[in-house]
Amino acid sequence: MMMSLLYKLVQIPRFSDDRGSLSFVEFDQILDFSIKRVYWLYDFKKDRGGHAHKDLQQFIFCTHGSVDFILDDGQNRESVTLDSPDKGLYIIKPLWREVTNFQNNPQVIVLASDIYKESDYIKSYEEFKTWKFNS
Image (cartoon, rainbow, N blue to C red; front, side, top):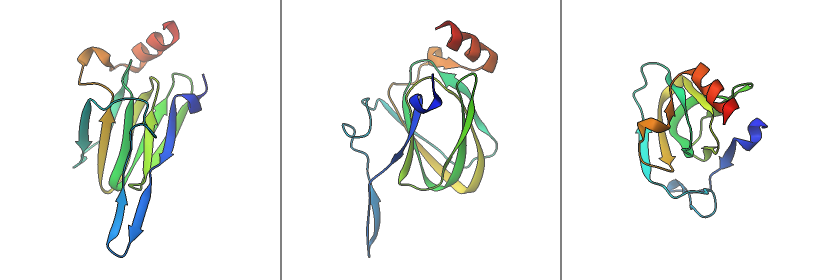
C-alpha cells in the first residue's frame, strides 16, 4: 500500500486579523472519526513514539514550535514536519511512528478515535512488521 493512503497532511483553516489568528477542525469536514480522546505532548526531553497502533486513527497538530514525525509502513519511511498550528497530520492506517527533532519548545495536540487501550499498541518494530504483513 502506498504511504499516501496511510496518512495525509491537512491544511487547517486559519483566520487572521489585527487581533491574531484562529484555527479550527470541523469533524465532518476533515476527520472520518469521532473524537474519543484528546491528549497533548510538551516539555519534550527525548524522542517519543516508537510504537504503532492497530486500529487507532489520530489527527495531530503542533500549536507551538516544531517536531518531526517519522512514519514507517514496514517497508518505507517518511518524515513529516509539523511546524505550524494550521497544519495537521492525519494518521489513517497503522504506521510505526517516532517523534523527534524538537524545536522551540513544541506543544503537540492529538485527537484520537478511541480511548486508551494498551491492546491497540505494538511496541516492537519487528512485531509491527510481522503483524502488518500477516494482517
